[in-house]
Image (cartoon, rainbow, N blue to C red; front, side, top):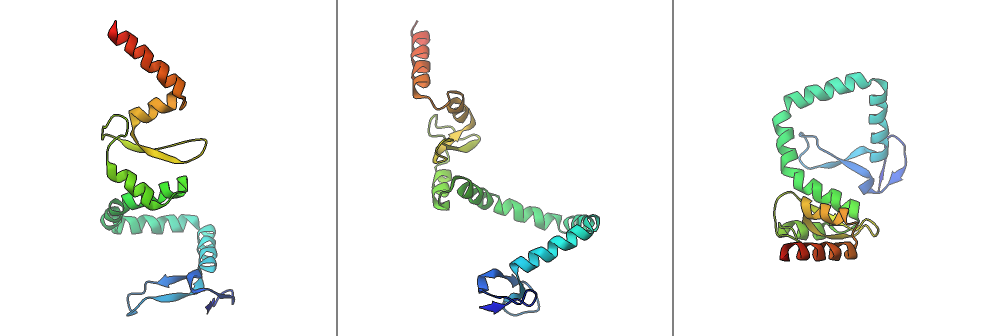
Amino acid sequence: MKICSKCKAEKEDSEFGISRDERMRSPALKSWCKKCESEYQRGIYADNPQKQRHRRAIYLTKYRDKYNAARRANRLAIYISECSRKYKCPKSTIKNLLAKNSCEICGGSHRLSIDHCHTKNEVRGLLCDGCNNLLARAKDNIQTLKNAIKYLTRCINS
């Protein structure tokens, strides 16, 4: 437990950010809680958004290579986190799907995406864009897909 020096409330340690001061030998908790810090930062931006945009542009120009390298390195982790949150499933499920690295219908490996049921919002598998669109255009209707198979069979055999 720690007391926030801004709001004076006693809060759990998890409600405080970690100080990244280079001079400190080991990381320490910040003196303001995350909520107070967030409100303060929002206030600074609201007071002078033009100045904050300019500061951000200078920072990105100065550290562009480092920033882009970090984004590239974290792209997969970010995608896994977003999918996990979006489909309300564990990250391990998404990682296992992506490890397959091929479409579950055609076996292709180009432009894969996570297929999910729109009504239940459950992850079903990993599909290429073409197969994913096939299911979407058939509106996940099994009878429509069976009719398509009959049609193709008749056309190919004649």
